Image (tube, rainbow over the protein chains, first blue to last red):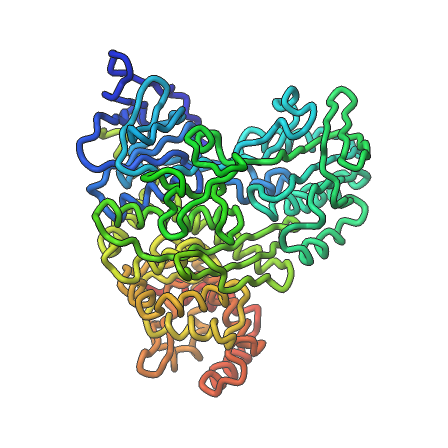
Length: 421
Length: 200
């Protein structure tokens, strides 16, 4: 893995709010410069599965449109497959990629955080600077609702979620590795809706597989706020049976409180559970920028969008894609975010060219690894009827197998190339 | 700027080639362009699969892609991972999607092959030549598909499905082909697949 030590820098135009020149150091010292808007410009906030795909596909469909992508991270770390890092089946390097492919498509990438959106002025604030846009695509991912768990806001730096792949993934893997045999790992699952519905159960299988093979006297206790496994229910129930001594699943056990000094969590029914390693996945909402820009609904959590264009129902000219959206019958998955990125990019290009956007439905496939070698999947296809996305069919693989795991590997390589290549 | 270009070409030369060829033939004006969005998640950008077990669609003969989608949708070719999408593609317009991938430059599978396996596979392929041709490109008029450049894992899996009669069960058209495949030991299938994957 290449380390990117060159520090990014920001140059303001000097007088008040800089509408002038935003510059950030490029990978090889070739600075990316975003000046005042001269032609048509699309700004994309967030370079994850949705945003990176959208940025690329706008450029592919109409290279005359300038695309500026705002993404604080210099590298793309895949959330799908990151549970395999916890079990040691994969390395973090194997799921880490850079953004050079997008630069090759002419996407201008600023490794800066969008601090605010000003819809009336059609511009995005980046600290004291601002970038104007004709259309804005927001792919903000999720942020955590720390305040929903008593004691968590004060402990959020030490109680790991590992629900955004990166340093926390590596840190949780290390905690598991250094735990003595005979220890108890506690993992909490938030109520729906959250990023990647099958993700916690895949993680349970991966941690249990690791314990079974490396620390057989240890146990993982899954405290699920939901009444049952929320995705691939029967398949996961079958998979859990492979870990009778190392995995215990407790439904309807929402974690209400954490006490790090006692290494103890309390559930909604009053159960107190001691842990050696805790993985608390907090409740989630759309990324902070979506809340700031008032793209979220009355629940202040998720963003409702037009099912054809992904334009926000609340703010004209602003499109929202990925896990932050609500109202479509789709899971918050990487495949869906990638799908939305392509469809939204096409819609934005059509709209900027004064044309009617095509009515394209998204797709979904979610692979889940239940051991080091076996995976299974849920598959969804959709159509658009009366302007709304509706499901055509959902299928599950008949079980978990090595063959489906091979397809999962292939899916990852292909979709990563679709997003970043 | 030179540094940037050098870096890009150096670290992502293969991707650059794919990208350039993609731009040359793809386009939002192609009626299949947006309809094929769904496929690239698994079959790769513009159908250039990076997978060992998921077929390359870039440059696939449109008649074969159409037949495949119809077979997946009807259950004649049972596959949990394809059936829902096949139904969706039929709704969107399979002809547009098939024509779109047919227009893409063929991108042979990037899966690395063992030269010794390819050599062994060449010898084992004698029975296949009669129908699939010396060059492995099949015969459109007879409905025999092009096998060249497909991922080896995909080719091997398909032969296993044919042998077990789990692909096109009861179909008279492939009855003779299945009989031949059943004479080939499973241990030899990897070599055979490597050989056809190596052909261009």
